[in-house]
Amino acid sequence: MNRSFEIVQLDCLNPHHADAILNLLSEYADDPAIGRPGINEEVKSRLIGEMAKRPSVVAMLAFTSDHLESTAAVGAVICIESFSTFSAKSVINIHDLMVAKNYRGKGVGRRLLAAVEEMARTRNCSKITLEVFETNAAAKILYHRFGFQSPEADKEMGQTLFLAKPIEKA
Image 1 (tube, rainbow, N blue to C red):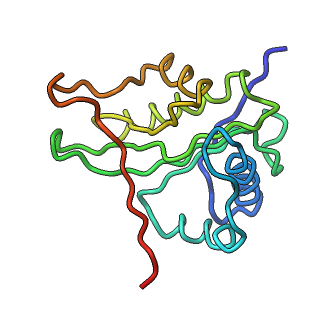
Image 2: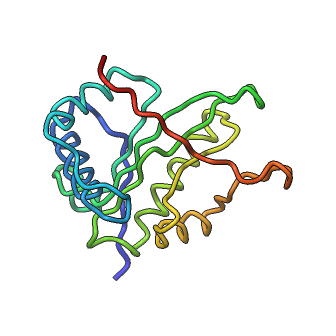
């Protein structure tokens, strides 16, 4: 059976969209492949409002063609637009890409990546970036097949690393 998926931009004012992305994020955050369990309730209660305040945050939802008005989204991607000083153009970072467990391997991730690429081209971005855990084999295969690769650097400089420093409350 060949399923069709509709990709729509998240409307933070649409309660169906808000519920859909929160449900997908909860499932995604509980997946051991991403390295940590869960999103706490306090964060979930603020997330949609905080995303709505930031024009640089763009999210898209994937619905099966018969679920456009329900909360049964089957995938989502959350992107953040930033800027490259080396190209003097915008960069789209895929912060989260998630596909419901029952829909993995059915083309949802590819459709979401294609929608992000189309958005990046429309915005004349220089590139799309993302981070993936080394142990997340399925995601790595998807990203490599879609054309993502480690940034090329002078061999003497080594691999580009992703680092993070949590900011604790004062």
